[in-house]
Amino acid sequence: MKKVISGNQAVSYAVFSAKPQVIAAYPITPQSAIVEMLATFCSTGDLHAKFINVESEHSAMAACIAASVTGARTFTATSSQGLALMHELLHYASGLRLPIVMANVNRALASPFNLKADLSDSLSQRDTGWLQFYCESGQEIFDTIIQAFRISEEALLPVMVNLEGFILSHTYEAVEIPEHNEIERFLPPPPPRECLDVEHPSMFGSTTDLYINFRYKMHQAMEKAERICQDADDQFRSAFNRGYGLVQAYRCEDADIVLLAAGTVASSCRVVADRYAKKGVKVGVLRIRLFRPLPKEPICQALRNGARLAVIDRDYSPGCGGILAQEVKAIFHDGNLKVPIYEFIAGLGGRDVNDEDIERIIEQTLKAKKPREITWIGLLK
Amino acid sequence: MKKGYGTKNLDELPLTAISFMTTETNQTGEWRSQRPILDSEKCNRCGLCWMYCPDQAIRPQENSFSISYEYCKGCGICATECPKGAIFLVAEER
Image 1 (cartoon, rainbow over the protein chains, first blue to last red):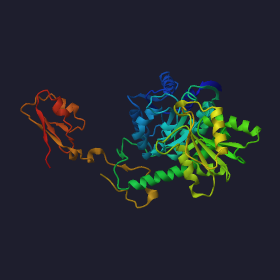
Image 2: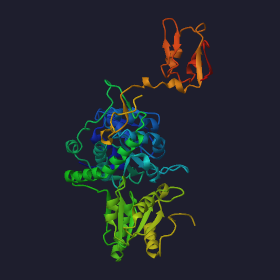
Image 3: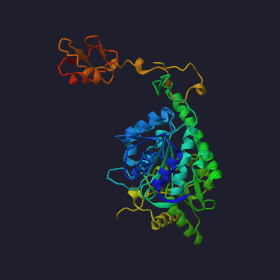
């Protein structure tokens, strides 16, 4: 069935279809509508899940962890400051190898106080052991949430699905919602795993001299997770005729300049790339959909030697620069692929990244003799 | 507390550290910097200390209460809640 719904509602409908057993959440703008809708589904009895009201995001994640340890399919949603407050527990969730799924509606971190889109909130959680997806449309949000449950239950790692605040969360689009039985064929009830058993009490995550071994097993799981994500997307495509890949390359094959971005900035980049193609300038767009684990091979495969890479970061790591730029520079460190990287910071705090901004990025990158310091787009004179 | 897994093989380790014992093996009394002392002459056996103790370290006896120093972390909630001032804290000496 096709419905015209917001990005937040796409999350709620997808979670509804995935039939979680426990949802624990605390409201925060611009996420609140997700859990309000899920709470309604629970109260009307349409969704047979335990909805736990908590007093903070820290408690929300604690409740999800406790529920997940018993084997329940578990979901929560948050944004920005809420995600930051969860930080400590994010490590517990991944260290305990729990398949928790969370939607994070990207919002700039204070201070100054801000409610609008910025990817720094989730990108700064990159070392917590969660898989991270970045969406671009309502349909992709719905589909990625469904995929996320399946991926997390196979990889036994938690998955965070990110969507930009207001730009995606409050924008209404037509979204195809498959029938429940179709979804259940792709996403069967959670497979059995090692769980808390009240008949045989045990402590999960207890003190051990073997700490480094458990961390290594997590590392192995993260390495395997990329394949699991690709397989899930392939099988989703054969079931529903839609798929996204781990990165999305557009006009990249013979491009002289490739714009790299995550989220909705990539959509605007493609429109501008088409315009440049008509002028005979080869501009490609590479969108990072999966950020953790970072799909290094697919990124390298999408680029050709010598192409100029302009990385547009809607995020910022003080003292270093754009987070995507750092990550991408590390991939090319071995020098096998010679791709000069031009760094841009744009759209922080929800500032629009419009056609003129992207044209300026392209023009500056084409004219530059070599990469120089980071360019900030949208500063006062 | 169980620390080994009876294996030297990485693949045979569980995904996360699981210990098949309960927190009873965790003698949290070692953390204590203040020791609660119960003056049973002042105690009216109301049981508030027993109800409020977060570590179940207050143990009901036939006609009074006793404090388990194996688990008491010395938080002092019992001393604050006692309406008769029958519990007081002294510095722990080890």
